[in-house]
Image (cartoon, rainbow, N blue to C red; front, side, top):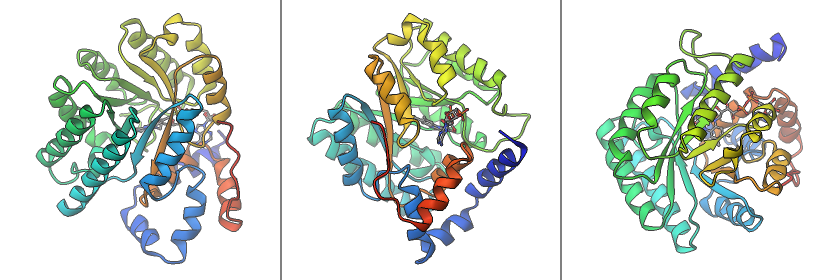
Length: 318
Ligand code: FDA
């Protein structure tokens, strides 16, 4: 990336965390629909039915899917309960059509910004219902200030609910140690590079060293036959992992965000690898959209076009 692109990415990541800006956009009758057009490149829609429809069409083509009702940092108990209820409804809808797939969530969406005990009880309720329908839950990883709490909640539930997995950000220096500990828990580990703006004493920037670290963690988990999601769009990392026979293991999957690198995903599926598309829905797409633009500045050009001319049919290779 050029210096200008790096600065633009940092600016977007810091504005992504600006709660006032997020509220302003969500409440603005003019701005919200404009930016919704832009977000449609990456989200399936505002309702679970739209996400389920996209999910079903991807399943019919041979992909697995994970679905997320998007949101984070929910500020009141009522809203946390509403979010939890939406997840329960989503699981129910998936269960009734035997969609034995994954539901992804941020713990701060269902309570972490208020109280760890509330979060734990909501997570257990979701895991119980998911278990009944053979659905897995995947916990996302948020800012580093929340990592300890997120891991602590995961460790409390993991052994009783092996249908819960956890996301680890390779860019955090602490992840070396965290992965060693998490290998003693049964849940799937989803490896991501990391999307948040973090200080340089806590996290690495995008670099060759980061890519090597990703490969090191992935190979460690594959060698241990630990359930693993390779959640990256990085073609070089995937090319390198393909050299390892264990990349074909049934408990190893490649997971990519909806609307990102769909060609690469399609090729992997056609080569017989386990591929999963990560689908999001809801109205709270502000942070998600900022991150998608920040990590690939060319998306800014798409954003400008989508804002001015509502996108017609977006070209996706799936
Ligand atoms: P990198 O950013 O180095 O990009 C490699 C290449 O991929 C780019 O050169 C480009 O070709 C392509 N690419 C990447 N992003 C693109 C985009 N938006 N548009 C178009 N092309 C793009 N993060 C986090 O902190 N917590 C979490 O819980 C999650 N959860 C999560 C789940 C899943 C399934 C995925 C795939 C990713 C996440 N992430 C995440 C996001 C993750 O941390 C990371 O920011 C993105 O995956 C982008 O990083 P890459 O690994 O793709 O590499």
